[in-house]
View 1 (cartoon, one colour):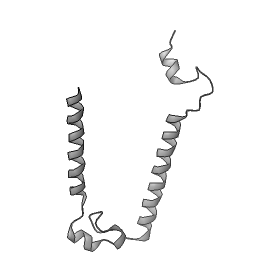
View 2 (tube, rainbow, N blue to C red):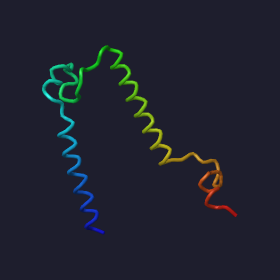
View 3 (tube, one colour):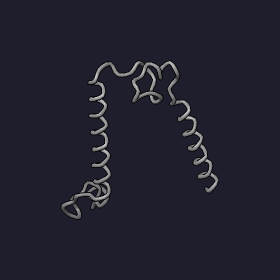
View 4 (spheres, one colour):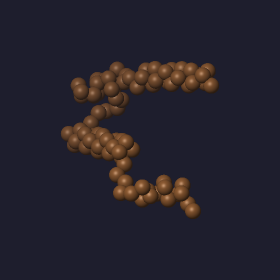
Length: 93
């Protein structure tokens, strides 16, 4: 079992190292990007300032969703002991 965990960890590290190398932008794409995005992304870059607004809005929504999900997992708001769908399924009598 310990060897399996070491193998999984090794594969994860190798994958992350390779993913970083692939994610680097090429020289042609670097020249076409604005300063803030150079070295990060491929392609022609944003077409207008609305593109930045849309991306920032999506990041805010995603971060809030992550925060709300973690908050609900760590501190669920239950009204009663048996008022949860999990308890209704597990405690069928």
